[in-house]
Image (cartoon, rainbow, N blue to C red; front, side, top):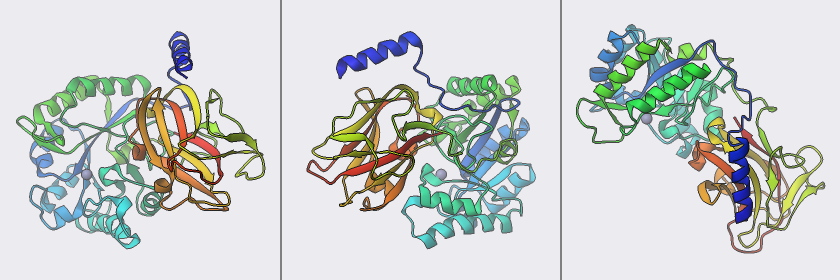
Length: 402
Ligand SMILES: [Zn+2]
């Protein structure tokens, strides 16, 4: 397939087809920026707060509430959090203990979500704890369902920008780790102004000397960023204020997305599959008139090719699978940019259980779970990873969700 890759690249470069605008992002009246600070580190109060306050820039603090309630070393005190609130900042939730929410029992998940919110409301103010950010940016369908019952929004750590029609439970944010330069952040700000999008950036700890951890940011760089924010005049908002200007979409409309396959290959996709397969199989169908059947045997794969899709425009991949008469197939979804692997996950892991026989199941995979939230994707593989002969598997309604 080398020559095909080469040809598609040459065409891509010639025709500028590389950046595919897959959905119509709707701009705001003007560009906006939110400064968000995670975990509740005490250096946020001692080093970031003075710089923000002197410039009248409000921020959103996502707090680990047990750290404040129990006085963990290195974290802000309750009195400091109350001061931030009184000064017009937003106080939001980042769970009780900073657990990976995808690894908890239902009772633990409820406690992390519910108890952190009620603690903030009781101790800091009734208007606190409306918005949420998941620790490590780790979430799945179970976490999403639960957090929607407690919170008005969810900020991820998936890089990118937000628009009026962004799903407010999958807000994108750019992590300003120690290696991110002031020039990079200025570039993001310029982009937000130019396209009238909403840029959310996130920080952890601050230091007035050289950072020794990826999660520390140098205070002088922080103040340079804030000076640039002021010089451009970009609107500064808390997450709560930014949300009020969105359309408030709580999930992607079903019509939105880039179809890889529904009853046929989606627009711009080519079928490069080498496993035994049938794209027009009409007996076992999830929706419409046909679904894909294929034999996931001996490392063979379905392979769907598209030249240059911009992953930063998407949040997740949805597809439906049916395990046929056997179920339990060992199959992996993998994304590639030409020969370069971008990320992969077994469908069993994504589902949280083996693929079932005799029924359709939706597999919803956040791009963050694939470790591939930006860059360009060309190839989507659904691939045998058993190395043996497995039962027929069915795939339908395979969509990239913005
Ligand atoms: Zn955190």
